[in-house]
Length: 131
Image 1 (cartoon, rainbow, N blue to C red):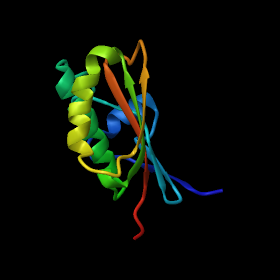
Image 2: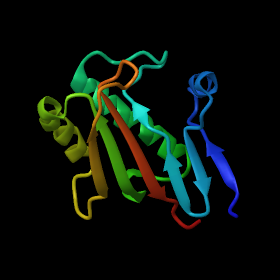
Image 3: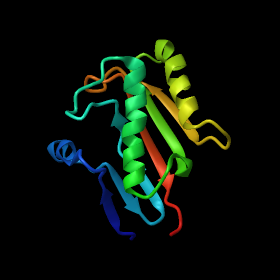
């Protein structure tokens, strides 16, 4: 069985400790990131939806960086939306800036009715580049 190593970005460990989860787990050459939301430094939701989506991408970008990865290393994306029909255009706009060219990662979008006060969450799997 492969060893699991927890990955944390600088500065937000207290939020992970309070909620008792790791930002990401590295096992072999794969990195599994926990869902990231558009939270501010104190953990509160960003009220502006477009900024909340961008902040969620920024937050998981920090986790990727802590593991030695970039957005180009992402192979699978799952997003969760509280109102997919009205949010889709905004999400696609932000997503297009993060993933501007082919090959795009896999993507699964799921409508949900609760995200602990948030309206968008993103979870990814990345391949860790060879050292």
